Length: 636
Image: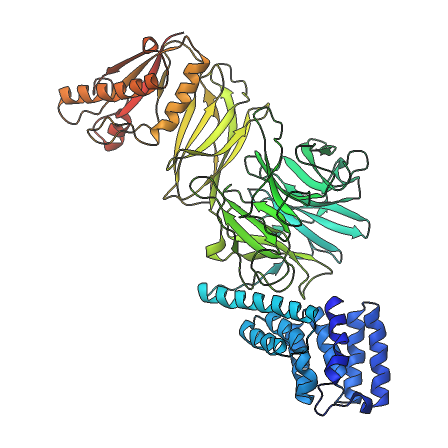
């Protein structure tokens, strides 16, 4: 009611500017009806006031206050087009009386996306010399947002994108409010919060199938027992739930972040995530990276850049969380940053801010990691995704094409409903593939808890690192558009390496791959996947160092281990040249390992040329397999 109260309060100031309108000459019956409407407005019953305001206008078609109040109510209900018409009706009655109303009029023009007209209206408002400081501040704030909107539109010309949110329907939404959507990376489970009553929020889930959304139901287990809880997120493998709550026996003081795990009996009893994450201040909006190694959230603890800032905590190799750190002034502002969401690509972060340049109130932003793994400057998602109203949390499907968010649009079942819409191409994250399976001992077939890592071949930067569970199960996303190396490590075993060349591959595929780790044993031969030398060259390729670093780790963990590095070629070319080239390639690897501190006595090398083929040299595919570099365990 703040805006409406401001509008009603302008009437006295406007009367002094009147050219023809005289409030004292309004029909008495119309005034009586108008006063009944004001009683409803005082109780925040906006829809109930509309018929009475319309009736008072019918009783006196020159009743300017009735037009203005009706315009204010319609604006509060986001019926911007009707609001603008009512303001213009009032203006047509008396332009002088209306002059001071150009501020709320501009706001409703902006609500329709008519930002240039809104800017003209607010400039006219600000030209009035008798405005108080509060009015000037309000006008200047709106002017700044309209100028931003106009500049953004010029920098982002319309390419045919249509913003058309679709209500998720009666399977998901109810007359209650639904919000904080979260989806698994397989886009098979939607988790969200539902406000049950003034004192209670519950966590709800809906299964997503080819036929749409299954009937939403309360999440099973202990997680819903406490009433005081709110923002929720599901890990992208569907195994963890994190949420904001104030559990009576575990809270530090205010709302904290809690975690619950999937079990056969439902979700486990929630546990406070501890002092590395939580403080006596407010922590909310948890968002978990796809590898479950980074937790992003919002907190209003002291020491930040504004009211609420975004923080991140990283999970350590021992499973404990490191103390959370502020994400810095590029991400945070003097305002409030809330509702982070990290996409399955582990490179793209969405969140809301009311302190960064935008359309007013809370806008949605996207920030992306650069080649060094640093967060770049956040970008506003633009109109009409962002509006003059508060925008809430956003979740984006793994393919980057669909977004889920909460809104109280005109087709809402009541309060906030969940919607989905197509993402504009320039604000999409990277599309992803994902790989899941088990890590298994090659000799015993027993599951192995291991470290699974994904590295960007272009810069040798580790993008994700996942620790498998006790059953050796792993789940990792592979952002498309680049080439990656997928490695698995465990002490006492030779490393496993797989090359994923995705720069030209389609997204949205699921790979299932069980990985068999070879125990460190005599005479075991392993082929390097990434070390593919250029023609007639023995310079180690840039992405080959990924595997060599893993081999160094094995050598350092097994200080008595001895290896032979072997070079092999196909049968094309002079045999003597091939023998020399293969030996030089093997020696280049030995030299690298020696330079890294490995004793030369533990390393030998040999070139075999084309003498040990593993495939038919009659085909290009066979010759490609024969052009290889390997290492063999020669001593323990």
